[in-house]
Image (cartoon, rainbow, N blue to C red; front, side, top):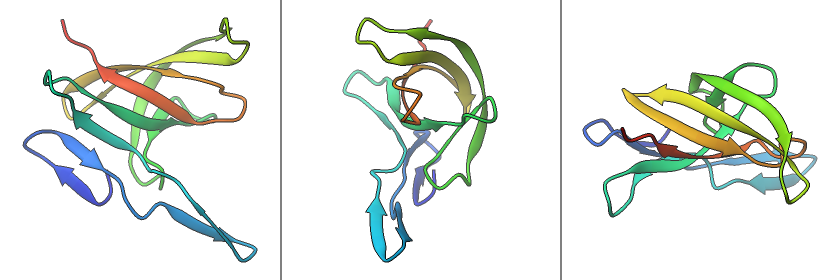
Length: 111
């Protein structure tokens, strides 16, 4: 998404995900889309509470998304299904703990 993007395999790995606030440094693992051993794309992106989109950690890549309704899981947190297409590949994911997290775990939809 930001630093390492492989156009042929449609994969990405975001790096340098730190910010400084009041003299303290905070770091994130960033967003990534990779390919597993079975050839299926998947990874982690971030949901946007204000817009129907997903994005990388830095927010410089934004992809339109469709959000499902908010529901309460059997673990007690609020969740939401997310669908989007990036570089011609359709993805589905679940945004868990939407009250305090923006992380959406996604996986390629295979028909």
